[in-house]
Amino acid sequence: MDDTQLDGDLTRVLVTKEELAARISELAAEIDRDYAGKDLLLVGVLNGAVMVMADLSRALTRHCRMDWMAVSSYGSGSQSSGVVRILKDLSTDVTGLDVLLVEDIIDTGLTLSYLVSNLRSRGPASLRVLTVFRKPEAARNPVEIAYVGFDIPNEFVVGYGLDYDGRYRNLTSVGALAPHVYS
Ligand code: PRP
Image (cartoon, rainbow, N blue to C red; front, side):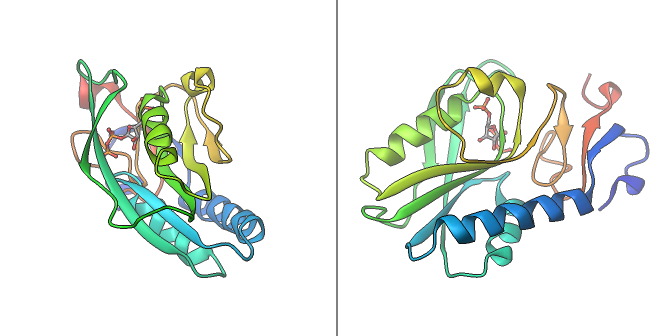
């Protein structure tokens, strides 16, 4: 669905469908170059990363493998605590592979810190991170993010995999959710 079908649920569109497609193509071209001759495994973090995994993988001009993890973050309300539980682990043994961890958004960076240290302990040949969106607080996190789609303000955003209460993931653009929807 697109934002015209949302009936006032967004205060504004932050990134259009066209801007998303263009940026994903740019990132794919960088990844094509950076991983030339390497055995690339894309690891998508469910659920939010499904859109970027589908678009990024198809924008590559090289082979890649794809696998998935699902994690749940313990915390109060919408606040992440950094205590992460693996709900679905990889099917792939990543030892010796060049792993690119693919996220939809890095907010506090706590989930990412956990995932990176967990994956690193499995002995990949390399481990890098791509995120479509990064919020300001993520800058306080020491984990390096090799590929960033868009730096966005600290607003409640939905679309392109990002949800509110399980909905809006299938919105083609990304927008700020109006307070009347979630308050
Ligand atoms: C989102 C996102 C990251 C995490 C980022 O997942 O996909 O995994 O939150 O937050 P952090 O930087 O504050 O740790 P979420 O828990 O919303 O699950 P979802 O992808 O299924 O929507």
